[in-house]
Amino acid sequence: MALRGMKVIELAGLAPAPVCGMILSDFGAKVIRVDKVGSGLNYDVTARGKRSIALNLKKPEGVDILRKLCGSADVLIEPFRPGVMERLGLGPDTLIKENPKLIYARLTGFGQTGPYKDMAGHDINYLGLSGVLASLGRKHENPIAPVNLLADFAGGSFTCAMGIMAALLERSTSGQGQVIDSCMVEGAAYVGSWLYASRNMFVWGQPRGHNLLDSGAHFYETYKTKDGKYMCVGALEPQFYNLLLEKLNITDDDLPQFDDFDEMKVKLGKIFSEKTRDEWCEIFDGTDACVTPILEQEEAGDHPQNKARGSFLENGMPRPAPLLSRTPAVASTSPNNLEFGSHTTEILAEAGFTDKDIGELLEKRIIEQADIKAKL
Image 1 (cartoon, rainbow, N blue to C red):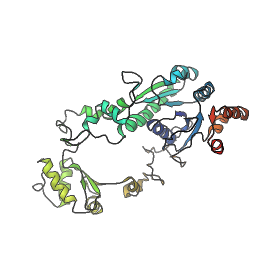
Image 2: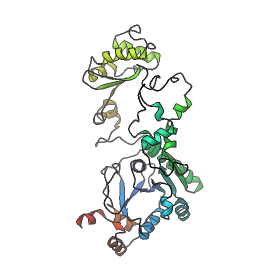
Image 3: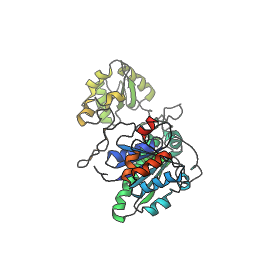
């Protein structure tokens, strides 16, 4: 795998940082998640392939352990607000001085600088500030956030992972680590680069929900079928639209491409409501009409296209992407959930701590081991 041999320390946080750690693990890195000593909610459902150590970072001994782990690591992922790591004595100036090859990735919503840097926020807030959310939604309605995909994951996890891999590649020639300021606002805006660059193209020019690609047009829309399921239509270009009409057994006179979009939506909606989703798939599969089914998550893995490519794992999770020809990512078969401190003693032993050291740290509650905690 492409990142085989890389050691990553992931400080536990909400979804963006864990998904970033999962990506690196899928591509071969050894990821250690650092959890807090004591009970708490375990938000990480993307822990496959990771190990967990539970540390008390409120104690100097716990901070020292993390510093030691970072001293031999290739990457650190930290999701805290600016200044938290510095107050612990674990800021980039300290850790990179001790380990000049360390890639120190700081994954936050608003970034390390600016008047919003210390504010709390979630995906919807970052997406709102990116300028992208204003483009999403139907006409005469408020903007609609597409769950927490664009800022948390596309602009957060995946953009940060891309930055980490770029920094690792650069390190192969310079021998030096660096700090990555991965800001979800900027990541989401970067994902939306084409939206910014295409503002003057013919596909836009109208308010949200009135344009060709934002649910304004009948030929780029979703439709309910007879059985209560859905199809999506993306017949944007004339040649594809003509095929759509052909498969529907109607003509351009019945459904003009550039007539009143709202009226055409009503007509097309009525047509799609007359057959089940499977019946429409039989009509459109294998054609260039740009009409495909909308699948539920539990259905996606069984679709012939996804099945042929092995796009989903046996447990229903998506296979890591993209697919590399020589060194493809291989998702671990370990569970997606990982109990806090499941590998604490194992990790410390690998780092050179003796059984006596580990026993004393357990007694002082500087560390926690999951199976030992369960017996107490």
